[in-house]
Amino acid sequence: MSIDDLTIRNARDAELAAYAQDIASEIRPTAARYDRTGEFPFEHFDVLRRKGALGLTVPREHGGQGLSLYETLLVQERIAGASGATALALGWHLMTFFGLSATRVWDKTVFERVCRDAVERGELINVFATERDAGNVVRGFKPTTIARRQGDGYVISGRKAFSTLAPA
Image (cartoon, rainbow, N blue to C red; front, side, top):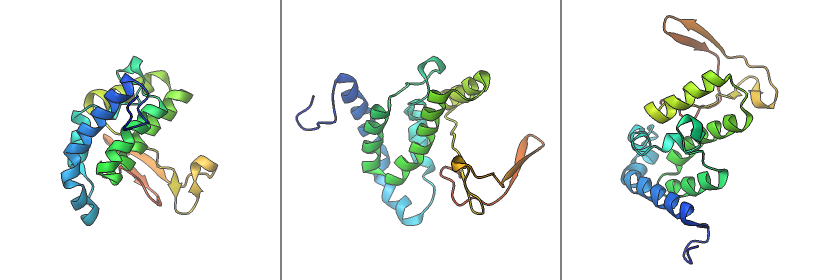
């Protein structure tokens, strides 16, 4: 344990902290500009992809790091020191995988594909849970937003109160 940082419990924590500090050093120079403009920090997510951060909470059997909650927070805290907004957006992605990994409620084949897409291609995942007219569907409200397949994609109609990661 480091006398300077009591959050570091072991060598693995120290490795994760150094990894996160490396990411933080790359995104820090542009963070204030994104805070000022309100633009989505695409270049920060390019760094996160390149550094493999999008697979941190993906289970190991699907190519990810399978970090614990504590380990995830060690990383998040350091990234937030450089860009709170980027850490928050990354956190939605990481915690979605964390929750899905714990519950395993998705079809196994679908979950494995989504995991591999995050690890190998840097794809993002998020839960659009809050609806302007219905509240939060996680708390039992019936969704009013509808997704209809159209061609190779979907057309989504409805009103969300917010959606982290939407531009990406």
